Length: 219
Ligand code: AMP
Picture 1 (tube, rainbow, N blue to C red):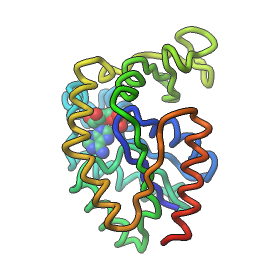
Picture 2 (picture 1 turned 30 degrees about the vertical axis):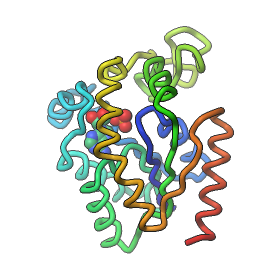
Picture 3 (picture 1 turned 90 degrees about the vertical axis):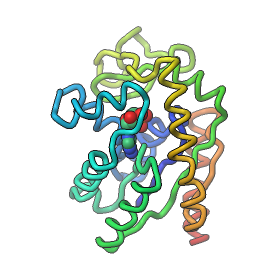
């Protein structure tokens, strides 16, 4: 099963991607996490990507598309994958569709995580992330047991460079202009499954699982 999690920054794609990955035993592919790992390791790709990421802009399609194509060819993606943060514009969606079609595959479900802007800003400005396993926390809603330490792996928790007030605004604008057109793109293909991304994590997971089940019967 090949799933895309679509939604603005802060919609919960990372959180739900991790849960769904365990539930369906397929990997979560987060382009943001892959890019951040490259930035951290100061690879050539990371050095190029950083200047875009720090100002909330999209990294060039050439870099990101190649990265995703390499990843979905890996053996652990044979039974499927969950894309989190990709595609981010129409050009990326077109290439993805073509690459999968050439391999005799396709996207099964596009989960549209819908969250209002005020909530997105609250979530992003208070978000903290584990440096090692990328687990998500929040200074109010989801604190770790020990301050600054990840419950899952014991590594340090930090605030992403792009979770600052001004960069959050830029990222939400980029979503509206570049990524939102994908809602119509996938609706026209009969793949878009909108879900309410507000509320408790467990409830949202259930809503997504229901949407996937329902989508299976409708396609
Ligand atoms: P995310 O962790 O998904 O919020 O992504 C963080 C940043 O990584 C974005 O603001 C972009 O700069 C970059 N990025 C992640 N995914 C993509 C993508 N599919 N296309 C271009 N840039 C991306």
